[in-house]
Amino acid sequence: MKFTVVHYGDPILRQRGARVAAVDDKLRGTIAGMFDTMYEANGIGLAAQQVGLALQLAIIDVRGVKDRPSQLWISGQPADVDAFMPLVLINPTIRPVGEVAAGPEGCLSFPEIYGDVCRPAEVEVQAINDRNESFEFKAGGLLARAIQHEVDHLNGVLFIDRMDSKNRSEVRDEVDTLQADTKKQLKRK
Ligand code: ZN
Image (cartoon, rainbow, N blue to C red; front, side, top):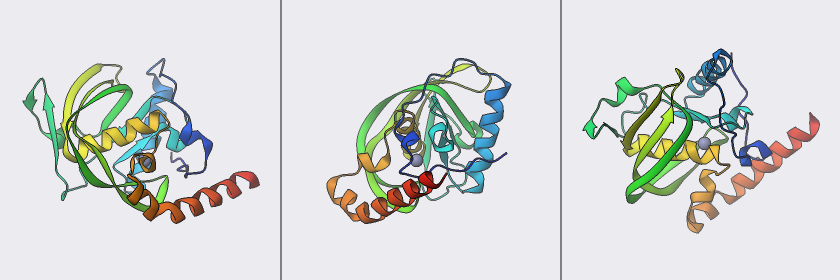
């Protein structure tokens, strides 16, 4: 099952996700569909809002990216990032730590639009997985960036909100055009 990825201009991207109440087969079906959708689009992360669901649910898989390293610590010990993927984050809470670093970002809800975003380089994460188990870890590098990008989505925050004014102005025209196109399409429905 594949979803249609929601583009910027659709109001659902500004909605804060509701906490997931039950990790059941229906939710697991949604998660499977989100993975199909993300892999087909060659994405490394996808939030529920991007498939039209305002829920505290995001998925991540950074295995396809070889030129931008990720780090992972479990119980304070370095751990294998690839073995930890794919990652399902349900009702996540994060605590960004470490130095702020700039890095390029894109978003499946903003096709062909890229820009640098400053974020803390490491993040501590607590979440529930798709087996309803609570888990904790610390991430660095690309994984930390992807997690912060996705958890922002769950709160209705988008990467363009995190850009400094210079980077934001560089993509302003493309973003405005995308927003207008999306609103036109929504009206037609
Ligand atoms: Zn995104």
